[in-house]
Length: 286
Image (cartoon, rainbow, N blue to C red; front, side, top):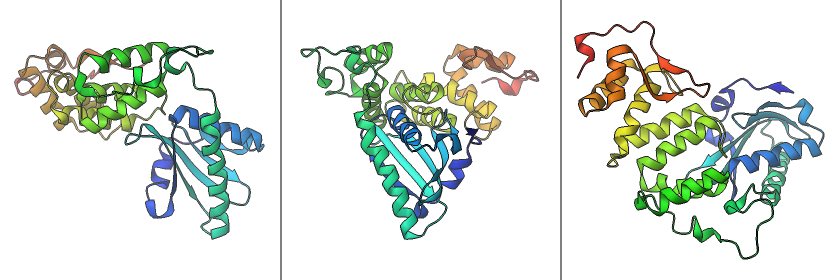
């Protein structure tokens, strides 16, 4: 199995006129497992080029030729957007590709759902229903229902149900939920690891002006801009955000402006984001 070069599919799937899409009412992790299972069933996995972190691949499908595929989270529904682009656009080949993808979409909901509603591998017949966690999902609950339900679902590993709540956060523009989504895409919790989506949710969190939450997102977004995490580096914009945060009293922003490093956000390996060439100047202070 060959690993697909990162971000290749972002370019190949950028033309909506030539790409096809299917919605699937499950989280991307389960849809990706269905796709891998279909490849195994058809004896194609050894010949596919896959990026197992980004949930993307280049597949040699019988009757369809080479097909680029992307499994991603749909923040309008809380489910999955399965998108593909066939290199051969003849109607028969496109129909073959769609038929294969439909089999993936049909198989995904039948796969086991890990620890659904925190009930473990053998759910009780009288256990909690979905409304207990997601039926009243709304980020406007702040530190009430929203955060407590999300915490419980994340703690037990039911990221699929958590994503239903987080879709509500996107609809409501709630920075607390948007920051959690960024963390999901950083770590691949039920969704692909896609730093560009992580950074975009941080951007949305800052722009939402949610009291008590957007300020905390500002340093993280500034860090992404400064070091080019999931986006092209823009140190001018990053320094403006750091200064704004520092002026509002953010200690981490002040630390960064003083030393070129802070500890509010670390890489997954535990290392800090630091600029070894940082030289503090009066212009770097609010």
